[in-house]
Amino acid sequence: MVDINLILAEHQTLETERLILRKLQLEDATEMFNYASNPEVVRYTSFEPHDSVETTKSTIANFFLPDGLNHWGIVEKTSGQLIGEIFLNIIKEKIVEFGWILNQNSWGKGYMPEAARCPFELFFNELGIEVIQAEHLTENSKSGRVMEKLGMKHLGKVYSYFPKFKQPILTDYWAITKNEYILLH
Image 1: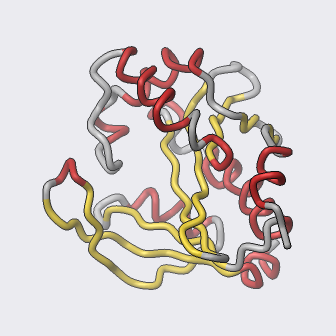
Image 2: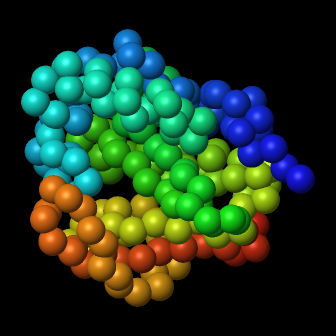
């Protein structure tokens, strides 16, 4: 049997050509606030824009640190700046939910598909995950493009509930199986 937490703990840092994925720290609060406070960046997320660095610190302390094994900060190698975060949460046996947020200044540079390949490979190859799935608000076609670049298939639309919207919201549902991912890469 695979010890998922041990493998995740052994992969505190992942690296691509342009990015370092590492565990988030309280010291990341100012850089995270730079994008978490931007209404355009958080427009399609489950949370409201952060109103202060203290709110961001609290989010790091209460969300990212306790559940840190499957969350990574995305750091651009050339600048050393935290530009976003990525997560893969195990939601059912063999099924993982994928999500991310990225600083608006880093949009359109191909960072998210590049960043996602490391944890995708880790979850499929070492953790025995069989399906990675994701949702995005239907109006957020740029997120759909990221999923498409990763080889994920658009499987339809589902309603999701985000408290900040106070009602069910239509989302596009995407997924990729381990076998599909292996064939593409």
